[in-house]
Image (tube, rainbow, N blue to C red; front, side, top):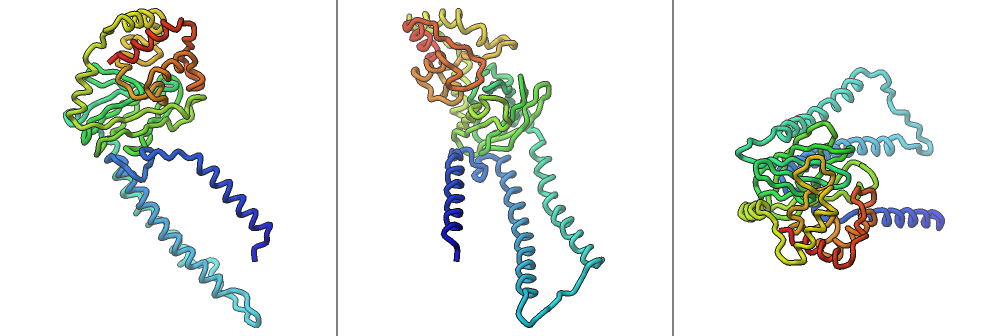
Length: 333
């Protein structure tokens, strides 16, 4: 029987495990076991193949182990010594050849899929996007479309997207769990990958490389749309954003005076994202819901939202000036 002390130990371990697992993020779009893209499906196939192969190995080993425990257990009045096989060439060959065969079986689909995923799609069959990782946000620049945005990658359903991945400061890792695997983001080096989406949806992206204080909040979204909806988004993004109301025009002046130094999207040396179409986004800083209150919170104290961010505080504006700036940014569509 299990002692009371032993029972409490088991319960303590289960309780701690429950607390640890409760901290796991339960976002459906972060599930690699439910892929919505071709690259993700190939990787899931490899996971399944490896898992079932290893389960087979485990079943064989544990069966032999249990048989030996039972067959040669110590029994009263019976002292059976198993046959000693030390130095048996036959057994040495068997347990050397079997792992080689298993590794070869696993290597064939692995190598095949590795080359498939490394083969970039043809230009006429795909769109090309330059991805740049910054501390702690992502920039997406669409080749040939004159579109640059941040934190949200819009793609058409059923079409491959060729990603050219750059790093601007420290190491990052580009990862959209439901669509494909990870790719290192290394300053001074260009890496490439492709992904696609089989159905419309919003897929969560993450930085998978510890890059500093704001690493855990370096999120982005991949928004997969039907081709017609994607074309509408492209058309909208290519139209210039014009301030309409008196408040927005006043906000534009405040933006020029206080924000343009970091957010002039045409200057490659600028350290902040292009805010030309800020009003079309669904999040602020990649993590907060897109509304006026959260924008004010972000502007007044960015580091309270995302630790380590290079965004300076804009907490010196008068309330009317802040309202005008927020009105201008929220309506840049």
